[in-house]
Length: 393
Image (cartoon, rainbow, N blue to C red; front, side, top):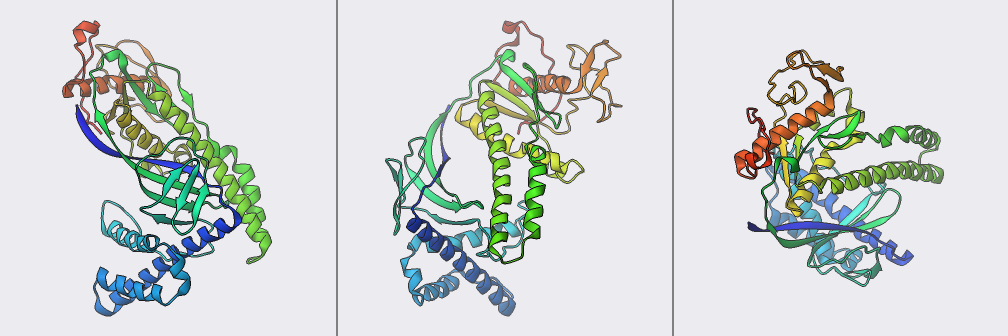
């Protein structure tokens, strides 16, 4: 048992008035202007001195820029400071070899997606949020929010405004011991989205392919419009609406599925190399499935619910091993196109995904037993093989 401090984000749809919408765009414009100016200063300073620009010098130059422009005085002071912090973070991410982030780019006002951040003084009360120098804005509040640490305001490509509130809270991290029956292995795939070891498989929804025809039609209409015209802007919003529909359906599906899996005290998954798989001929299907987002939600929801989340080593041959008890046969000739195969040693016929989920369950049990989180196997009357290697994610 340990007491930990973690963060949680709440995202609410905003309903600003016409005047408030204009002011929100002014705040976003200030954020974009400061970002572009700071990036330009850093590039010019590096071209002259061959080294990075000191933060103090950059802050002083931007302060003089803000003092000479009256419209900047109407912007919250903390909102103006945030672009500098984001720029330094972008530089650190770029030069960090583990992040694989690109070099910071200039922002354009033609992009319908605009945002700004205010780290303090934003209060949520009675279905409204108070934004400094703007006032109270109505939001669609679905749950109570306490101890707000920061607020990020974003306009989507369809013109909708959302606010994301970050909070901190303390919780007791208690990982209970589990029995083998409480452990569930899950195999992820592009035919069945997830194949649990204890229930039926969940088919892949394929939201992008369902809306592919409508998306092609709206994109053709957009490409035929004259650049700079109002009709082209309207067609661009229509394309954004289709993308937003796909994104919302995918997000709702993943949230409902991960919430359902929290009923299992322990879940085991394979540690997929998602970035590499997204560069193969299966890229469209992999991106549509969004396995990275699925696993991310499983991790933090398992943390909040005190559940066990185990990721088996990606080199563990879950599909090749026979999942029959006391059978250690491995089918090294198994091809990716083989959806079923029979074990020549014990004679059992396996379905590929179901066999993989059973093996992942056994390996998850072995890992939890090695960490001391398994109840006595003898008391459960089960003989679980522990002779397979993996790692905890």
